[in-house]
Image 1 (spheres, protein in one colour):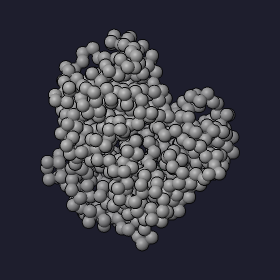
Image 2 (spheres, helix red, strand yellow):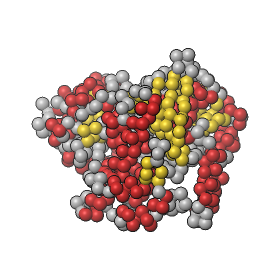
Image 3 (cartoon, helix red, strand yellow):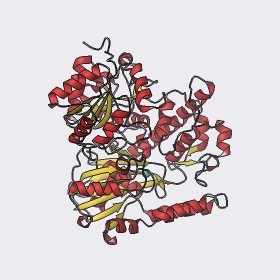
Image 4 (cartoon, protein in one colour):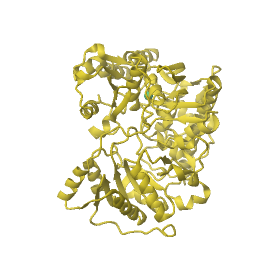
Length: 590
Ligand SMILES: [Fe+2]
C-alpha cells in the first residue's frame, strides 16, 4: 500500500512516502525550493518522493494531510470573534489566509495530484506528531507527549501508544491543552521579545539562556500557572498573539520584563542590558523545563511505562529533553529526527497506514536519511569545469586524507548519501572541523555561518567513546542519536573541546552508531588516531539564511562562497585551490 503524507501552510512544508508500512522517502520543501522554512504546498517535495519511488499519483492508495484544516479554521474564527473588536485589524487577514489555502486542502491536493477526493485523508495535527514520534521509535509501548505552538486547537497532548503482538497499533491521546494556552507560544513570545524570529529562532533563546541566570522565574510564573488537573494555563493579559498577528506580547508583559530587545542591536552579555536579556532567556527556559518535567513525571506515574516518545516543536529543546530523561522517571526518551511540523508529513502517512487502514505493524529503520541522495559525479563535473582540483578516491584513502585535512585545521564540507529529514545535520550534509580551539569556533562563525557568538556548535563522536568525553546518563546515548539532548562535556576535556563546549560546559552532541553513517564513523576513528580525540565539530552545511544544502551543486556553490577548504561527496574530493594556511593542532596531534 502506497501512502503519501503532506504537511503544509504553516511552516516547514514537507512530503513523505510510506510503502507497505515502511518510509521510503521524506523531504522538506525548503531543501528543494531553496526558500528557508518554505510553508508553500510542497509540490517539489511530492514530485521528488513520487519520482524517487517510480510512482504516479494514480498509484497512491491514500494522500494524508497532517491536520484537520476545517477545525483549524474554526479555531481562527472563534478566537477572532471572541476577542472582537480588539481583533478587528487581524480578522480580515486571518480569514483571507485560511480561506485562501488552508481550508480547501482537499480541493488543492485533488487538483495538484489528480487523485480522487475519496483517497484524501486527514489526521489531527497532534496525532501526526504523536505518530511521527511513536511509530518511528524502536519501542513497542510508550507514553507520548506532544507540545508545540498550536495545531488545530491542541497545543499539548499526552497519551500512549502500543504496537500489539497481533500486529495492530493503537495511539491514544488521553488529554490535551488547548489554544491559547501553549508552551510553544509562551517560548515564542519570549523569542519575539528577545528580538529573534518566531517559529525559527527559538533555539537562539536556548543558546542565550546558558549565559544568564534564572533570576526572573517568579515573573515568568505570573504568565503561566499550573492547573489542578496537571495541565497549565497562561494569563492572557500578558499576551497578544491571540488577537493580532502583529505582536505576541502585551504592554503588561513589557511592564513586567522591561523594554524588549531591538532586533537590530547585537546582544552583548557583558552589558547590564544584555545580561537582562540572557537572564530572561534563562528564566523562561527554566520554567519550560520545570513544567515539562512535572508533566512527564505525572505521565510516567499514570502510565507506569518506561519509554517516552516526545514530538512537536517543543521537543527540539535539547536542554529540556535531557532534564526529562534525568528527572521524569522514564528510562528511555525518543525524539524523532524531525519532531516539528515537517515530521508530521511522515507521521500522518504512518498514522493513516497503521490506524485508519489497519495495516500490520512494521519496524521502521532507525535513521534520519530519507531525503534525496547526493550525486558525486555532478560535483566532479561542476568543480572540473570551474578549474578546481578534483580527485576520485577509494574510501579508505579518502577518509585518511580528510582526517589529515581536519587535523591540519581545515574545514570540510561533507555530503554523503541521502539527506537528513529534520532540521539537524546528522552526518550526511555537514560542515566538519576540529573541535579543539575557540579560534576554530570564531573562524566558523566569521567565515561561514555569520552568526551570533552566543550560539554553540555541536560535536559528533562515535557512540562507543561518547561516554569518555560527555556525561551521558543512562538513556543519554539514545537521545544523542539525533542530537536531541544537551549534556555536560566532562570537565577534564572542556579545554581541549573548546569549539564545541558551550559557556555553561554543555554540548548538544550526536553519538554516532557505525551502522547509521559508516563513512563518518570511520572518519571520526581516523581523526581520533591523529588527534587522540575522536570528536569533530559538526554543523549543518549551509550559510546564514539558506536551507541546508541538498544537491551536490548547492554544496559546491556554498563551498565556493565561504571559507570551506575541502568538499566531499561520495568518493569525490574537491580541494580549494587557495586553501587557507594549515593550522596544525598543537598538543593533540601525535
Ligand atoms: Fe506542530
